[in-house]
Length: 131
Image 1 (cartoon, rainbow, N blue to C red):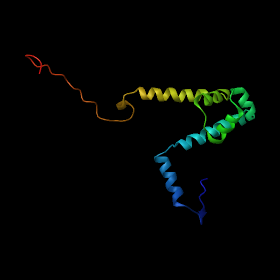
Image 2 (tube, rainbow, N blue to C red):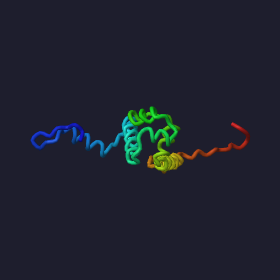
Image 3 (cartoon, rainbow, N blue to C red):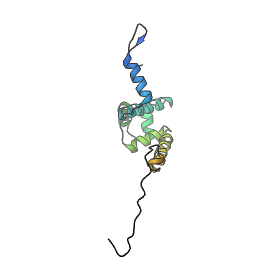
Image 4 (cartoon, helix red, strand yellow):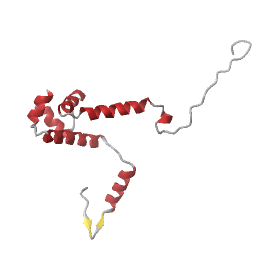
């Protein structure tokens, strides 16, 4: 769970507050993403019943790099993509990137950030020369 203790049927209030806040304001940190990434690589490799050496050979990445990726979640982008390709998981990243690209192409007012519409500035031309 979260390391919280249960005393006399009561859950610590910190656990309740954190659970509540995570549902309302899910905060993703870099550490969260790295933890998910290293778990994804390790579990996907194990699902294929591959050793780290097998994954290294199939991805063209040194085994020490595979080990570090599974331990820390850290790798260069091209290394990460090679490993995910070997594990047949690169399509999910591509889909996410396409969706994010689609979202950033929207004007802010259509992206859920409901600001007032931008003011239209009309140019006024004065008769009788420039001002």
